[in-house]
Image 1 (cartoon, helix red, strand yellow):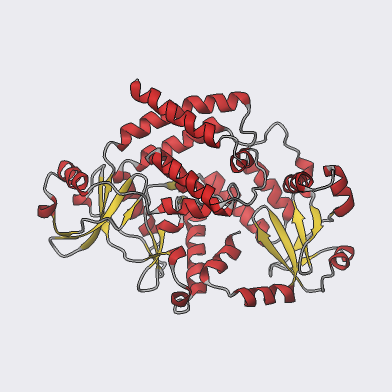
Image 2 (cartoon, one colour; image 1 turned 120 degrees about the horizontal axis):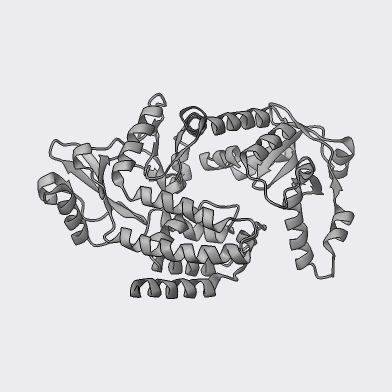
Length: 452
């Protein structure tokens, strides 16, 4: 009980410090995030890390949520993907001896004392088996299950309070916590991850540019996972010079098709593809590692996702909206007619910006708050925006919009639709091409354009 009380004290301190921070309130209410101070973001990550593995895992998940957090926080959180403080080698030796029943020196002819990666739940060491097979050995952090059980119990009580007072307007905190708990506890059994590695490797066996390491069953238990060693560089750490020697377009296409197959055909997919789990190997392939977290999709949901993909590819906006409604859960304030409406705003460099009603309202409120003059949101809408007519997107990604809007923005007849998070921008094609040439397009930028 003393441990539980201490944990509540830690959580109370953390909530008191960050509960009213701008980036937290924006995220909880589904509002557009603003810029942030990098030093404040780094302090937040250090505090998160000091609270232990459960919070580190939460930070890893948040590190990929550009829809919730400002860039400075995403950059600071990215360190938690594979660069957490490691635990002592003596604990590694003890865990291996307890789990495998032999000393490290008897099981392996080589075993690096320093980990090649350390994350929330465990750390990975390079080793060589007696038969000469080079492997990566993942060892679980000591006492982690007990700490996570304590953290999750405290989280549950706090989630009930948050839901009761309506602090998180667009989030069912209790349900999110239950999903987080289920996933986290499954990750603590490395035998489950070993099975996931075999499953996904089999699914992707025909993709020659993608590799998934296979486990070594005789050296794998609930707390120790031994698998093929796959060398490589974290995908976001690859230098621009190295990318010039890689067929980035081919890799991006293979990765995209691999995920389509996992989700739409196989129904089992790698659910934690943050940059720390996606490597560029020395032989110029993409390695998917750390399959402790996988997603499973029912046949019904697969069918709906397939319909959604076709609707988007063919530019059928209303059909796509209908599928999204069917996939989601209707909240009390759900307003179906608004799904077919868009707001249009003048952008920069001869462009228009399209917003959903919810996205536009967030933007209008933000500008009204920041304005030096007292500007009502409704006045801002009336002065600067007009409601768009229905917009068709063809197979080449080109759109046809009303002539009056083309003239209003100073666009040519040749325009391009570019997806950017919760809104879309319509650019003059020549300006878009010039922008890409000036910026330089590497694999990471192509992937961003493909998935945003």
